[in-house]
Picture 1 (tube, rainbow, N blue to C red):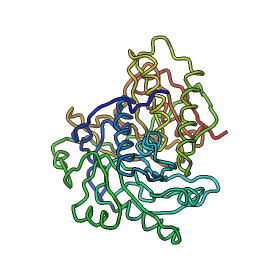
Picture 2: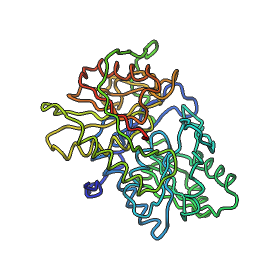
Picture 3: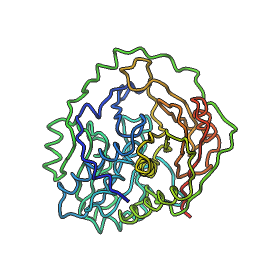
Picture 4: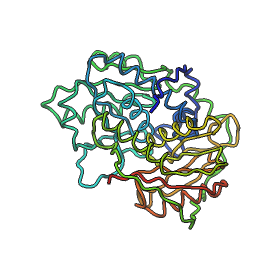
Length: 383
């Protein structure tokens, strides 16, 4: 499979930053929406993966000669961390933090104080082995603002593993930590790398210049459409520490299976690959393969999210349409899709099949509301 690292591109910091307004969040009233990250906004999968490859190159340069355990942060940085582990030769193990519960797993809990969903967890299963076989833990993020969340996880790891000589590092697309905090981390032997440094609250004043229609009363639209389902085995569990080699092999096999078993309509010139919450990286790889398969296709990727964000019709604002959903993972949990459009074909890529059927009904309802009629669920399961 061709490597996305062959795409040599440069990314200005303003390519990676659009400012949006968080809804009802007193901890932090804004967030940066990265139009190339593949989370809130549809993006070319190849372009997103080319961006993430920059961090893989940085990991190889910054931590040359070290065996790394990379940890990506849920939910927005799961694909970034996976792409780094997929591409960096010195990453030996990878896992993500999560807000989900895995069957019969034990966890290390820590907090993300500014988030809409503050409780984070790290699955302990297989983690001890990974820690004993690596030289450094590298945390991978889209943006590091204060460093508090990473500090909470570092403290939790040191408490849980007092007998291990743990070393840490941080890589992110953006960093706005204060100079004193950066120097403190470097003095503690925690190297910090990033593509771009931005000032605290960079461009935040922009969100005051938009009109935000009320979203009160908006509810999910449920569909009774029965979807065709492609079920594939051999899933890589991103939330549990595994070797990067195993991750690469399983993800490549997933893409190969989809391409060999899925028949797309001849007139499908626009394709949306849609991930569910933390499940992003497999869909990005699939989307990139679909782009390479036919350069005349327009392929886009983004994902459902827990983040409640205000929308505005102003063309200068990043998010214009919000569709409320039920989570496909848990009953009663609200999730969202932003800037949904009509495509010739939609491929839903999820690591959960019908855990919450109402969640899938709401997801299909939102897609149909925007004119999408050809929808296939690709379920990647463990067996």
